[in-house]
Amino acid sequence: MAVVFENDVLKLGRDVLSAEAQALLHCSSLLDHQFEACVRALVECDGKLVVTGIGKSGHVARKIAATFASTGTPAFFVHAGEAGHGDLGMITAKDILLAISNSGETEEVINFVSFAKRYGVKVIGMTGNAINQVAKLSDWQLNSEVLFEACPLGVAPTSSTTVQLALGDALAMCVLALRGFSKKDFAKTHPLGSLGRKYFLKVADIMEPIARIPHCESEATLQEVLPSMAIGRMGAILVVKDESLCGIFTDSDLRRLLVQFKDQIHEQLRLPIQQFMTASPLTIETKTLASDALRIFEAHRVSRVVCLENNKPVGILSLHNLLDNKVS
Image (cartoon, rainbow, N blue to C red; front, side, top):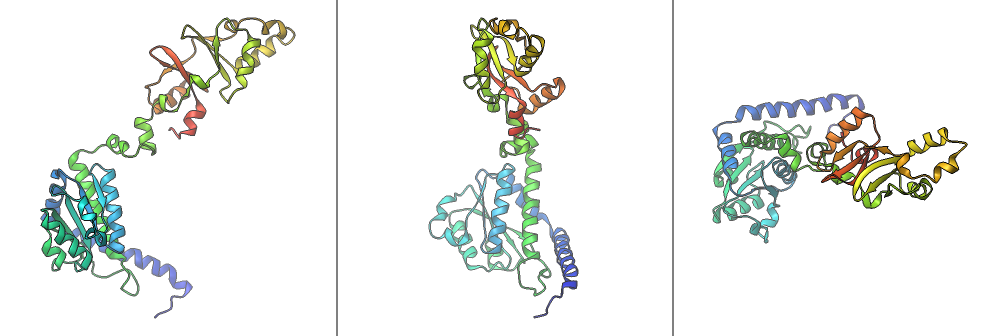
């Protein structure tokens, strides 16, 4: 076996990438009416897409199934070796099986395709040539031919798996486009991602509920309510009366009070909080998107807003809540 010296590594790395890029261009030139037929079949499918393979092709199959599932096509992976031992029960005649095998002669994949055909399942075969058992058994055939592997030994699946993966992406993206799948649709399957948070995370999901927030009646004195402001990190107390919002008293209000009445603070502590609160504070509806709430924070340069539901105070949303939930 040839030894690769350190000064050859960069050249070899570039050669591998170049070989795989050439393989993708070659695959692109092979696309024909069979590809179009596969896309139409997947768009019209009333069931699920089942993707199978074994070895390196199995790993690729898992990723292809995940891509389809996240872009609007119900899909899952079934290991070809497990299909004949019970997993075949996951498949119905409404489904489409995408069978991936570079040689098209992998015994486990051939058996899976044969079993599926008995139940009337339509099959897309993705193989490295058109003359093999998997291709013969398939209803549609996608040619994932590569002229050579990028491996310097010519044996490790490299160019072939890259082409399989890219061909799966091409299928998924064409199906996505024909179905009119949108960014908002994508966000539905990625609720914890940045896009999902942008479209679906609401103020109600991340606010601090009133049960965990210091709140008091408007007649309560400062001396009575100040200890409760030390609870948590809210730095504020809601002032309510008969479940209606009267105002808010914050740690900033307290600092200003201490400066203004530094020599008379004991007298001020005995007065009702309504004399020092901010009446009619900035509010937001709980159904507001968190991403829209962030715009409000930026526009008004505030650190917290009162959350309302049916005109009743139900919580506080702070800038910390937005940052903790990575809202942008």
